Image (cartoon, rainbow, N blue to C red; front, side, top):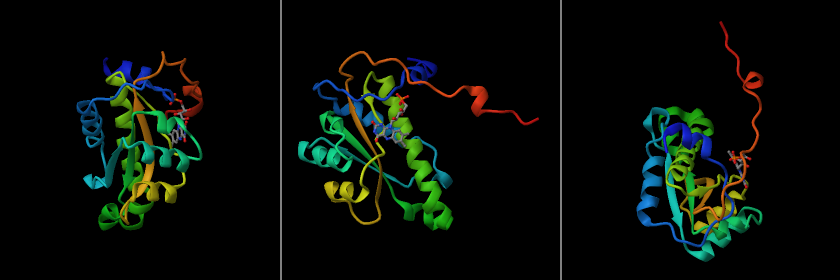
Length: 173
Ligand SMILES: Cc1cc2nc3c(=O)[nH]c(=O)nc-3n(C[C@H](O)[C@H](O)[C@H](O)COP(=O)(O)O)c2cc1C
């Protein structure tokens, strides 16, 4: 799949086959994640690959009952480490850059999953403290995205709509 196909084909996948995702593929997803840009190259991120059913279930509960999270063979939890950005950028690092950096890493994972024939979904609606407890995260890590990953259970549906380019973009001459 070339780059433009990946962009076209990526969509949120919320139903998965039970088939396992090989560890080499997970490594490629994480390898893609750490190639993301980050402010000052601070790389204020940590990734947790969750395969344990009880922990996936706790994450699904944390995500206000989005049970498809627990049905994926694995969930990658993307965490921000704000203090890494604070050291160099102070408040802007904490409030903006570490979140943008981890968002870029999250998108890299989604695109890499598409390129590998996997399905994934960016899940951002969850109770942060419940996710911290589910993972027993150390202080200083802020979970920012849950990414259930697996083989799509069926042909992905049609693409979701987008606002027209003319509505959202303009050229300033
Ligand atoms: C920051 C963010 C949070 C999201 N949170 C959720 C979520 O909690 N649950 C969910 O099912 N999808 C979630 N999504 C996926 C969006 O619903 C999805 O990207 C959007 O509807 C467009 O569809 P597409 O990804 O198939 O193009 C989230 C996406 C983003 C970027």
